[in-house]
Image 1: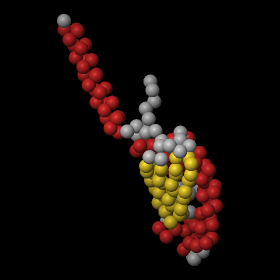
Image 2: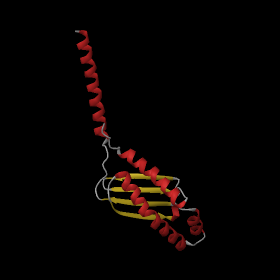
Image 3: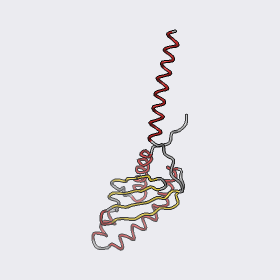
Image 4: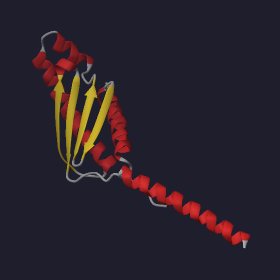
Length: 150
């Protein structure tokens, strides 16, 4: 039996969950919510409540530069591991990862640029395959009934 490709939604959900786990394991901070959205060769990753308690505290006390330096260090630690994780899940080489922290609203944004679009099953094709399977199964059952009744 062949393995079916994931749908775009399935791939986005798997990436979100895996990225959240990576952050928890690497910096002991898990963003409240991670949203992944795939656009052809691009993957947008938005993290809510992305800043660590130290970053938030420093930002709130007027130490914006220090808070930004810490974020740059976190990014330098996370980016190579994030790239490997995403490449393993999507099986597509990454050309570039761009990231930015939005300190005022406690979010981070990451843009991943792939060398080619990840392979996903288009929902229309999946529905067509399911319809054909159903149609073939019904006709097969009718054929069995006709053969047994003669």
